[in-house]
Image (cartoon, rainbow, N blue to C red):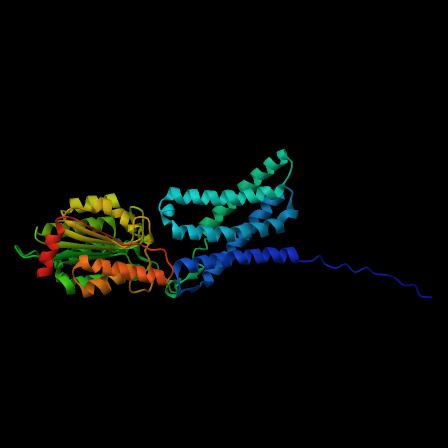
Length: 429
């Protein structure tokens, strides 16, 4: 009789916990994409580079959890920790983007950003420490290890694997044919570029009301600001005849030497050149377009090492430059914060947003920012009186923001008591 042997087949353990953890990771990505789509509005697409960065970020966070849990001898908590942490991150992503949209002033300073980030990290650390649920002495020691490793992991993630660009507009994608700027040649060209513009600047005609203009685009990696410099200069020439008395400054990665750089040195010189030629009957129109924060206007050309302009510095430059009666238009997020520094009886100051609000439309490939299009391309082109053009533009901006479900930017205007007479003389010509 043949003997029989029985065999026991071992089935692998269900992979459900690992799949649930993976689903939580994917859900955190989807929450980030949804939040960015809600903030930036329609017309964008998912960035392949952003997805790759999100995968790398998630891998670093999981690796950090592995290290921390191994150090405290609780590897059994890995899948649970990954699942709960990424679910919490999904909720935090939605909450923080909503806070950025509804209360952008909280992000306007480095202190505010650091505080919000610290609170977010504290919540995540609290979750991980709670998962340990060990006796008090062990809990304190293990919690400290978890906190230190987690904070180190988050520092790596924030520095090298930010997922701020999961959702981008097509023209903002990183170009495959990216060519670094020759910074040495760029700076070498500045005296020549400024000299050519100043030499072409028409002199003032005594007794005749004329308009001098400055158009400045501050951010190098988004072409919309360079485009607005050219477009606004053209509109000012058509409406006020400022063409031969116009200076242009722009930071541009794609066209770095089309105009002098928009840095503080060139801006100060441009204001002095205009101030030296402007008569008391003349009007200076100064247009600045870029990104911004509270009391800060971005002069961002990363490769050239430029430094941003503060409201206080701009106020001093206007005084040092001898600028007379002026219309100053600052198109940037939080640009209303400049008003209290630069307003004066002989100035009309217009900003794209209130001091605690963001403006919109700043992206590579666009022809206009939202405010630039509404004020210059529509309202001022139709009516050269900026006092009448402003409410038309503000209404148009509000209409677009309602349609796109964006937080109102609330453009601002400040009219000094003496500027009206100057504007009337300009318009009478």
